[in-house]
Image: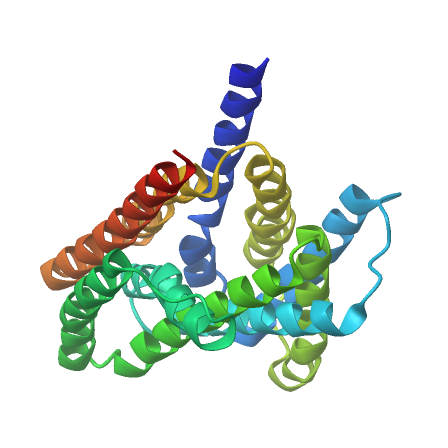
Length: 285
């Protein structure tokens, strides 16, 4: 029974990561303003997630919920903009630095002092970012790279806020974030008037219902059945697949420096997580 629970949890996280990884492709395919894409996707996701959350206990405190939701909404908006301004590979690997920033923000706001492996991983992340940013400076995508790294920091802020809330329902935070994102995008819908055609409509429907809606539900289902380290390691397939989908469909090819820098960043996060897990095992013994 336990093995079955673990398998379904890992499978849910894997499917979640695969769906998440398609974001770069569809952001490239939809010829709308990035904030309009983020808002349209979130608007559809709200209904999907509310249907899943139906009959669950209502949240008791709204302010902490809004705070965490704000950071997640900022993450989604910044990531979509970054994808429009730089290569998809750059955007995803720079956002994937979030676990390292989480350590630093946790130290500042939760007084959780980073361990040696966290500092080592931060050093590796800095090396990886050097190669990714070097590519951005050389090809004119510097600002997109900057927004991608900021999206990693806001994602980390969301994780810290969630940790501070402890017993909160992750679905509540995601729904709140999508509401914030949708409301923020309304002026952009009015100003930029998105082109309505079959390709754009089908793409935004897929993103809202599957890429972010179903993926969120799968993540919440999986994270209750597997350890955080297992979830992180399984989800590490996302930064690998994201640029692959874009390459296959659009032909956008990341440079060798981005591939190398991305590999260093992913390795840094995995090393930090494995070391942290080993430390937990040692303490429990």
